[in-house]
Amino acid sequence: MLSETEIEHVGLGLARAILFGDYDGTDEDEERFDHAPPSASPIAGAIVSRPAVNAARLKEAARLVAGLTVKSSVRAKLVYHLMREETDSAIASYLQRERIPAAYHALIRLVDCIEILVRGIFYKVAALPRKVALDAEVARLCASLKANEEKLIVYDRVGVLQRFVHEKLRLHGDDGIVERVRVEPMRCLLSVARLHLNLVDLEARDPGYAIYLNEVSSARASLEYLSPSPPPLAVVGKHVYTRWRVRHLRPLSYFYRRRGRGRLSVLLTLDIELAFDAYVEAACRGFALNRDAPARSAG
Image (cartoon, rainbow, N blue to C red; front, top):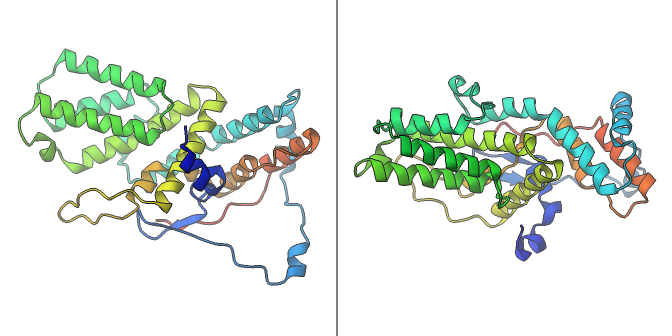
């Protein structure tokens, strides 16, 4: 759950900047917020036209929410459907932006994706002797990360995974083994684990769970941008960015197509005070919106 400080100073509204890409990357890990320019004229700003919608999607939205009588259920149904339909493009965008080698791509959707990668670090990269007991520990940890009884966001669970890998390397290897493990395999393990757990969260639980974690990840990323944590100790030859954690805290929705991000933004900012019929109409139109979210740089 968000702390009172996070709710007061970030909330889920300010988090849109992270969730929907309203800020551009100036480097791979540094971000800046973009602000919309002021209206050229107060008269022009007073004339508001209804955004264009896709007629087929509007009809689909009406079908999806038919029979629902609670606003939150209408919102959840449309948001979850949108999240599912944006998944494939988000995966492709994530893999490209994270520079994940092609050899890892086939593992993303495998049930034992993380187990395979962790065993690869232990037995291939670090050359530890194969141990049945260690394999069992890996399996138990991965099952716990997926079950996520504490409702931790992906970033926090991957932190648990990283600490586990380092601990077991030190326990079963010699002094300095963690430092000798190559950076690239560890980077790919952690990055692919983030993507895999995002997919597990979306596909293995109810819509409310997936939406909740998406929103909390967004809020945490916004808070990290506004109040960055101390950066890790610099590694020789590697530049450390002040807001390096923002990149890893982003929800999968950050990688949606521009139009998908625009639709999600509307759905998650609907006015709950609207009358039910007006709320349903606004939700369906948001789902069918033809407007894109703001453009981002390739950073």
